[in-house]
Each structure stands twice: as structure tokens, then as C-alpha cells.
Image 1: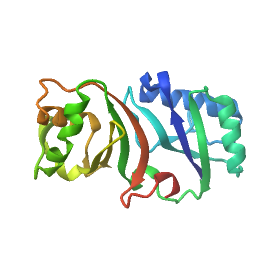
Image 2: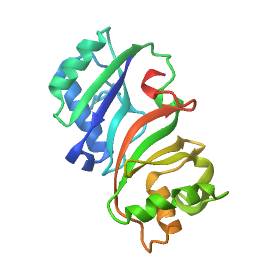
Image 3: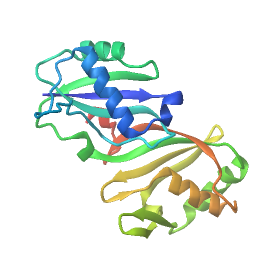
Image 4: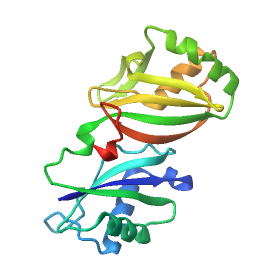
Length: 218
């Protein structure tokens, strides 16, 4: 059995890397005394997995991880005991126990929702959105293991809208195609006529399945 866990990461902890977050979560799970499963060997560790690593500098409102269990535990008990062991800026929001053969969260991931707040040139960026989306193609260069490769971002931007002075973006997050928000913002800044990408604050507000349902509920 395993627990599907939704958690948030806020404020200054957005600056820690994925490996640091994983180690912090493993330490919290050990301190909690919850019945989690460990790997075999000389250096046992908790076999947790994250649906999608957060980029450094990005807050996460509804992040998803999977924690294998050695015995049943009530979701409310799991949430309370994990929160007691976590730092205040990381919160376990919900937990749901499923069978071991339940599809992995990472395998069901299809998209992510972001809230992006421009810190400079906001009027130019926000005004450029309709024309930006009207393009049939949005060419960009993406870094890969083989170097820089061309990519068309347009089919990977499912939705982009202006709301209350910020951008809400629904972007593909899938092995067959991913649109990273920083790459989209570079393209939008260029389309708006800015010489360099405009700085911005960003939060990942949700992880979604290919059918755009909440990943934590899949």
C-alpha cells in the first residue's frame, strides 16, 4: 500500500533544490514514526517519489508525492504526524491511501497550472498575451541532453490568461512534451518587444492529469 500525499512549499523554502527537499521530507517521515517502507542494503532510505520536481525559486501549492507504507494508517493520522515533523513552510495538506498497483502519480501527470506575476514591464507583457496566443507557432530553443534543440511551444500552452495583474498559465507537463514556464516567459517577453526576459515571481498552483483533473485525486 502507499499514500498519495498533497503538500505545499512556500516562501523562502522555494530556494532549496529538489534533492534537499527530498532529504528534508525523508527526515520528517523518519521523525514522524509513521510506518513507511525503506530500501534494502547498507544505507536504507525511504522510497518516496515526487510526481514532478519543483524548480528552484518556485513555490508549490498542491505538490504530490507517494510514500510506500508497511502497514495501514489513517489519512488524518498520517497528515497530522507528518506536519508535526515538518518545518512550518512545508505543509502536508491531504493524504489518500491506495493499493501498491495504483498507477504512479508521475505516470498520470499531464499538465501543471502556474500563477506568474511580472515584476517589471507588466503592462507590456499582459497586453501582449492575446497576440502571443494568436500565433500558429511559437518557436523556442530548449536545452536537452543533445544540446539546444528547437521546439514549438504553441501546442504545449493549453491556456494563458490575464487575471488581477498576473498570468495564469496551463502548460503541458508530460514525457512526450513539456513547456517550462521560464521558456514560455522568454518567448512572451521577446514577443512583447522586451530586450531581455522580464523578471517575475512564480507559483505552481496545481498538478493535473492528462484529462486536467487534480493529480492528487487520480
